[in-house]
Image (cartoon, rainbow, N blue to C red; front, side):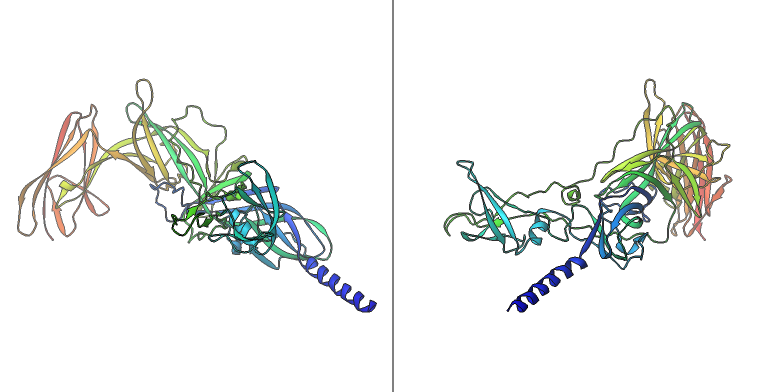
Length: 514
């Protein structure tokens, strides 16, 4: 009998020791240092702003962590990684014998996930009497999950949570395995001895983006402008990165990081029949969502991202911190020289460039279909050339632009436009809005049965200074001819003229079938 008891005890000890040894866990609460490289959304046009509710860019995150690894096989949990991490992209270096397995924890700590993971487990039920304020606690076992009514079993029997009209809540003595307050990547490793290793973790994560935001101040005569630009980084993830070595990459990659599903932190919604008879009002009652205040719950469910801030006024002094541009093959890299915090669900702006007295010229342009030019409007375009002689001479990343003019007491807004990606030596054209002082009137002088005929364009300038005007007239399947000498741009006839102040210019042309 004694031998049998000893054998049973030994088997129980072995069974208890086996799983414990196989489930050793080492945790890394956060990185010692982190670097973030942000890539633009591949499909976003230069004039399109970032959609803060659905950021389609991505980031390459590199973290350095210190972790204590026990001897044998263990699971190392990297807590606080980006929620949009692509686990298949993760590269981990620094473990003595490499990595055997990678897993992304799909559930974050929340009222619903906590309840779901406690199914069949013993918890404490706390009730408060509304009349006396007395608090009573008892053991309870969770018998159903968080979908709909939550059924619990107490010494008094089986009942639904919060359906007796008393203020009550469940108290948990621990967090069940598999739940984390932060997005977590776990890896399985093995080591012959217990060591403390310095590990490098690199991975791609969705939910990031960046753009340039330009501010141009035009001189009174319109011949010069001061150009300033912010590098605006956007982090739509629930994880922030403190004191990160941060940089942004301009240019188009072949594809990009697919948008990753986020770790789940569902709310807890309880439903039950109201107290009363079967003839009572049977509409279901929805209780307010229970919340556990943890950082990882700031998710897209109830958190709207911050609104885009208004453009700041043109700065007078040049900022001390300025992003540094470097070549990266066919791409351009903009490095922020000092560590910055890329906070969760926020934007960060760092000075990108500042140039004084950049040569500028205003062009009023009409882009019209020659057989029907009446449908077109004149737009105002600010032009310059990306050269040192003209005051620039550096790569310009795509982004939006706000144009200010010099008022009597303060700057005034003249228009909004955008800058496309421009290399050194290229022409830069910025559409800043419709023209106010320059207008075009089109009159049809004659027409034929095949659509041929004559047109007259009259451009008027109501401004106090001469205006440069261009009309690009697409021919389609027609052929355009005129007694006025015309140039060609991108295969289309181009009429270029300087319209005097408070004056007008006229073009007559004929169209006919080819």
